[in-house]
Amino acid sequence: MTGSGESFVIKPLQPIAGRPHMPEGYGVPRTDEGVLAWNDVQAKFAAVKVYWIGTTWPDGRPHAIPIWGAFIDDHFFCEGGPDTRWGRNITANPVMNAHAEIGELCVMIDGAVTRVQSLEPTLFERVADAYAAKYPYRPETSAGMCVLRPRVAFAWDQFPGSATRWQFAPA
Image 1 (tube, one colour):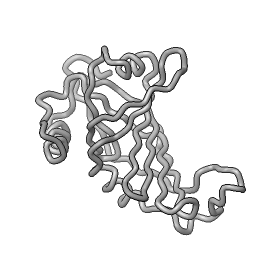
Image 2 (spheres, helix red, strand yellow):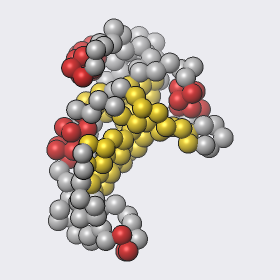
Image 3 (cartoon, helix red, strand yellow):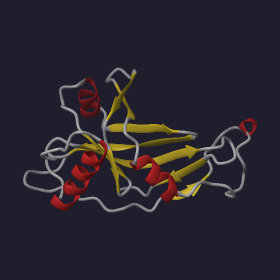
Image 4 (cartoon, helix red, strand yellow):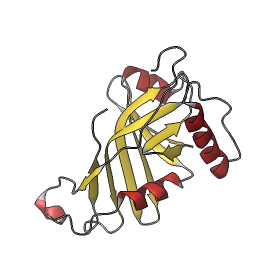
């Protein structure tokens, strides 16, 4: 959470592509030939209308819901009150995953989530514009918005040949 009066700012990340760690029998290639380009995956993920997010109950049970969101500069933005089930979950354990199936392309992003008091104004305008372009809704404020900063992402469109894992530098 950001401090009072402090605007949350992000910087685009530079993920490193490779292969997911899977047992030999899955058929995932051992070389990086055929990995997906992050820019292509990023653009398709940004265009998604309904994302699924996963959080964890305080007792360890999983919780998944569909939600609207925006994916900008490698960060996922979504709204939801702190009193919702998933809001209470991230208060207790501030991690989340966001995922989507886009035709043949499956994308999963895991990382730390922060509920912000405000986004830097230019960033908030970009987030609000992304919402307005996809939904009959435009956020009026960034207060309470959640920001997922990726730690790792996975995607494929032709499993197992294109199975790709991206690692993001620590914050």
